[in-house]
Image (cartoon, rainbow, N blue to C red; front, top):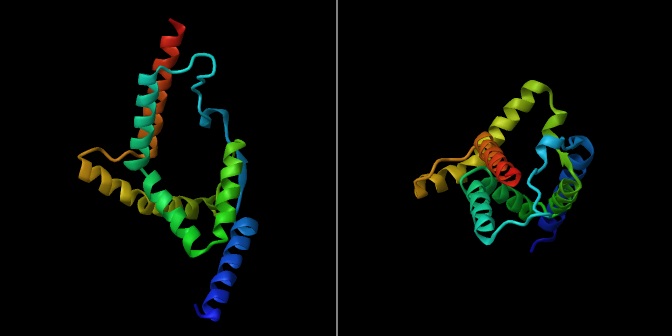
Length: 160
């Protein structure tokens, strides 16, 4: 491969990584209501419950924004290898209960506009998959509502 192309790709990746980590990243702790509430440590789910949970989560990913978001992340890492450092750091922070929101550095109007554009782009593969499967596209609101209903059912069954 041409040495200039490789040098240019490395330089672009470095600039992108530095800008994303130093300029536009806002780290915040996830609120208690944003964290998963189902606790299976004391009473693990039955195999049937586990199958239903995994099926629902997989469908949320495939028929929602998860599929497109994953494609954009993988594509970004392939195009800009150093973006992988940001993705790895973001994943570790998420495991620790924190969230990196680059759009939070934008003013409120631009943030809403950016989030809308991102949702449209990330949701496109999920909309296509849902249309092919004859399913409804799952927005973040509908996913959260569905999870809330499942948590209420699990809590009511646990109380009985």
